[in-house]
Image (cartoon, rainbow, N blue to C red):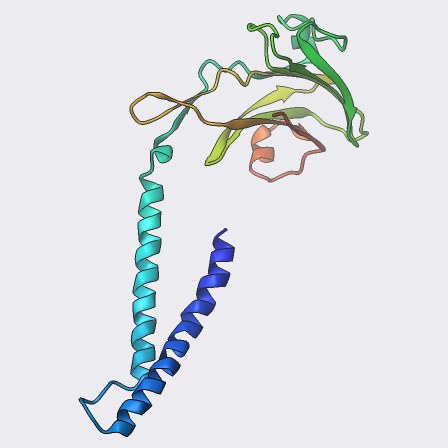
Length: 234
């Protein structure tokens, strides 16, 4: 958006003063030839003055827009995820969890999709309207099918809204399969007065298989993951 505006404004700053000076010159020459009245400023001065006026107007408009954006109610929004239960489980952790119904077969209240990427096979459970309130919105069973060695994993749940969003990550032990349990209904936006605000957002999830056990190396970009899985959910 700002790029388009720049393309339009910059030529205007160059050509408008020139056009104004040329139009002014026509009347200036008629005035000089008539030999009447007070002396007018030169066309060059008229062009410079118009350039200065345009510059001041543009700076004022940009400053006003920035202040309006900075102090708009949306800038005070806070995201409350304290009741969000999104988590990624290893195969061993899954066996002792409350989500064992999501074992690759159909579950009542969910749509099941079987998909694959270059390095992963995955099954995506998506809650349909009328699905169980106490259960997660999504469950993803992720199986790595590549041949690269990895020592651990790093999962990241992302909430994306029009102002940016946030993410929450966790390091996980090595596993043959990973079970991403994702809850998107317990995310609340509040304004500066603590009042709940209706903001549209989307969810995304990523899983990176790490050749090292030190997840900080992966987060800081010091090493590349052995494989990465990413999905946008709604």
